[in-house]
Image 1 (tube, rainbow over the protein chains, first blue to last red):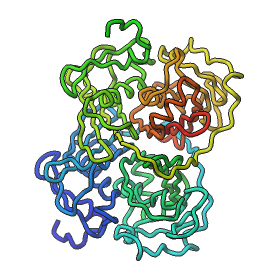
Image 2: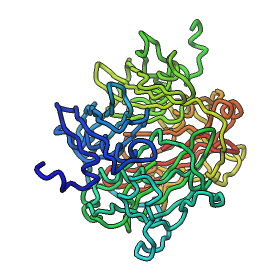
Image 3: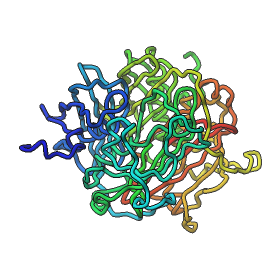
Image 4: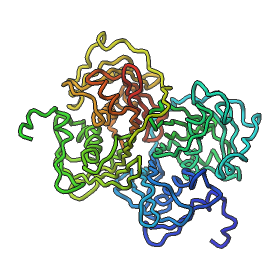
Length: 263
Length: 263
């Protein structure tokens, strides 16, 4: 890489240097900082990147689970990625992110070589005002990572101090602010861009963190190529808030078909 | 265990013998056989059981991901469970199931010590005819594992050869046929009892297998204790079928509140 300054900020944030096969070193980038530590989406994409960029990797991702086990310090980290089992059509990976020898994140990913089969979409697309008619979310009051995305909220925004809402549903348009053709790594990161449902429901801030996130990829490379740099329609909701934990289920859709589901 | 014959079939199916700390041996039980190999729900519960029954385990499960990496033979297997990181409130585990030294399943689980907080349910409960008014699913034409459950289908059953359906939504009542008070292990297993959405949508059989399943547990011990041996209302749907893979999202609910979500 002769001109690292030309890297897209996202590529800089998820960049890994390989010391030996399956072992990488990375650094936390302040451009994707969250309230405390790094934005989880960039970490999820970094972990996926460790498997994705491995010479043994076969096929595209269909599922990714990232578990955030401990706070991540703003310094160097190591990622270990291991192809656990490879079959004719699938490949299972395990990844771990460590700092100072202690594991901060675990992850699993499944890659698959797809074949043409009967296909259908059942997910419905939420009705939404076109992105061109909605204002850009002002990221000034948000942590640094938000400024990397263009978000245009259709419904379910957050105004701290406003009246609590009856539900936690949000719908918004999203894409990279600095244009970057959509790929699996960007989808993994965007899976974590949904603001905490607790904030939306209560319109109040709480010190919380994601503990586990699973993304299912319905898109394949040809669908991603058609998407390019266009906005995705993103929608999220919670099912239950209970004694310290809540869920969040969400979809990222292209203008036509479902692109990815993330939970 | 002096009277293993007195074990509930589910407890027999997920039973592990510990050779040393974090290493277990188990056997596939024919009572939970699937079309090919064992029922994935029993395997998921077995993997959760490895962490759950470990002396270092703290708190109850809030998330479980199980990845089925290879066919599981009908013979002995080993499970390794490792507490990756423990914090004040959460504990992250990694588990692997192996046969003859090759990994067949990977799993991660998060346990948490809950505290009393603001709580709310947003999930809606599907309208359903009471279980007492619905016939028991005849398990005779299904693989062995189905006969361990009482299922009463509200909508979205499968009749191979019937006309394809316009969606893949199913709703049914479910509980253990031989009464067994609900626990986290049973919930993990029931997360995989939803028949493949592809079969429901197309009303046709295909040779398919689960590759990854994530369960989020909203119930805590006190909710489980209240549930006891009563039926759960189970509902599942797919969002997209595409070139060899499809998703399935589902909830298992008590008569009142959401008990668990599984995807």
